[in-house]
Length: 194
Image 1 (cartoon, rainbow, N blue to C red):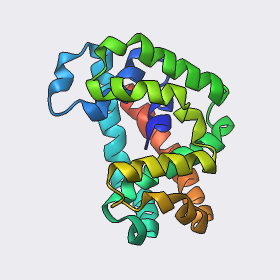
Image 2: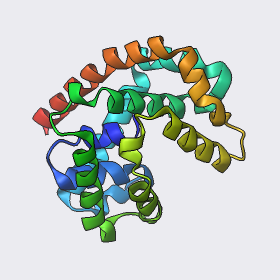
Image 3: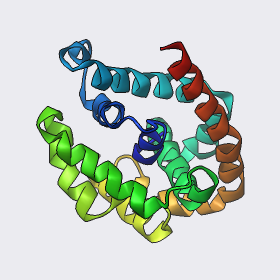
């Protein structure tokens, strides 16, 4: 799961959301340096990633595209799933996506001093280019994938990710529709046990 899914799965707790969004940049046990709700968000992010990476439906999605992206298949699948979440947003939230995106940007801006350097660096780009809202647009996805491919010195092949997605669109979309409610249920179980 990528940015949109992680923020959506954070629920109504702003500190949990901030922790969830900074988790990839918090390595090892550095999460212990944060306040409780932010720590919970970091741990939630890790649990979401663990559940996602091990799930058979996600593995099937990666297998569909592995010949194109190799080790980057997981990253590409995460972004594909954010695309489907953005596209089908009203099925998962009563809050319009544009309003939700603004809320997320506001939360991250208010927690700016606590964000790791990497997240501080990308946040202005995320807000200016409205990343969360842009996942729904194939044109915007092309820009996102091109920029990611550029950061890997064009080794990942991600500049062709939208074309590959279109080839497998119905299978990938069906996999997302099967998987995401299961992930939502898993997050509810994690929240209830906390």
